[in-house]
Length: 197
Image (cartoon, rainbow, N blue to C red; front, side, top):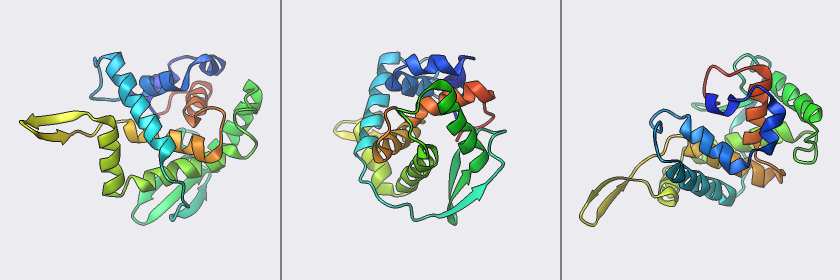
């Protein structure tokens, strides 16, 4: 989880922030994007969000393991590819469900949606382990690393996969707001995380 998302100390103030603005904030706080033009970051965030929302829904093929030690590092779930595993951190999921009630956000995040969105989010990361999906995201974003005449090499945009995964989870789970909003509010409520999710 990007520290820039937890910038405010009051988690309730995050609800007034647009999902796309949160995505821009995530990119702006990602190393390599310091000092980049906000309009450019917004275009990238919008492209990544659109891409993730349009990803074909499918089942997560990874083994699912429940753990109870994610709250300290603010991990809801984590995907690892070898072997393909999704770890669900039930302590963080439970805290997120309570926070939704505390903030009055149930209309955006129905009961049980935190776990479902975490699984969908990690399923999207599973998609990004396929070269075709990564390449398609690069094409959607259109950031050029190198151009020699008509030859164009597209660059990876750090943070774009995370935004796309949140958009995928929002769409697949039919949420009223992006899980990025809930993650930001959770970070503010619990304390800034120590590592990227």
